Image 1 (cartoon, rainbow, N blue to C red):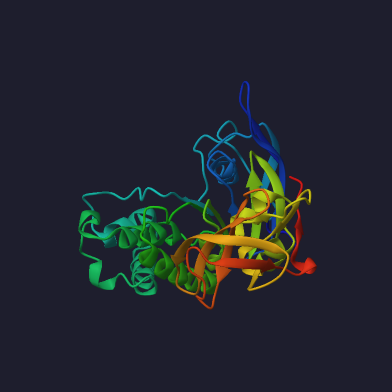
Image 2: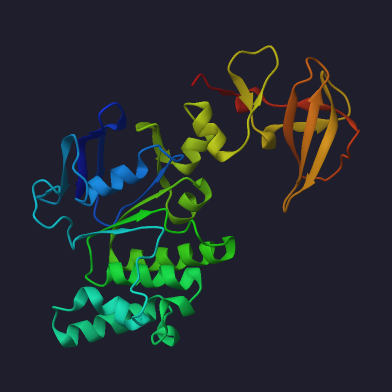
Length: 319
């Protein structure tokens, strides 16, 4: 049963469509990532979903409540739907504890005290509660912003590239911690990002948005193994165009390296990565360059190699 839904929502400006007609239905507690490059309409979608931007058409519903846009509501936004940005939006001269408690100013003092204490514990912020935002790392500041948004126990949390300012180690740690907290709370989550790796660390359900249009939706395995377009395929890895075959591609991991065969090339570059060497191989016929994984770390620059692949791994991609 749908709990949070966007029904035929679109957004257009004078000469440009930022978001083509878009529909989405999520169950209570469901997680969804929306992945797309800059300008794909991700942030527009979230602001409409939060009731902070007026859509050109369509409706947003939370249960049986229609979410009103700024033209329909005197004070835009809802406590039930919280939007978290990549900029932390914290009060600079307030402590961590004060920042988290700010949305609860008009709540019962005892509830406020217990709620803030619970969030400090859940997000590992107890020992920082008396610090100011400038005394925290980027990851800690984002935790405070998340705790602040969760203070009023929202039904829906909208995450607008909230990890983009963090380094890889901070980001992975925060995503893991946040996932645990949100699962326990039963919060419905929409996470938008340009980074597919971040999306897959938080959710398994992914929607691909490009130029304001939905390109494909599914779980990570389905999207990786059966992409509908070159854009979707390249979100997971580079793809190599197979010579003399229109719209046929093969991923670097699906190429096998041999010392004899038909598709001949020479290694022109080698990069050491964690689980394999990444090779650039120039094909003899036509000079095309392929990117190929070498998990055995066997080949060096200048080596002559033959490339093989299984037909079942070939991707046929037109868009």
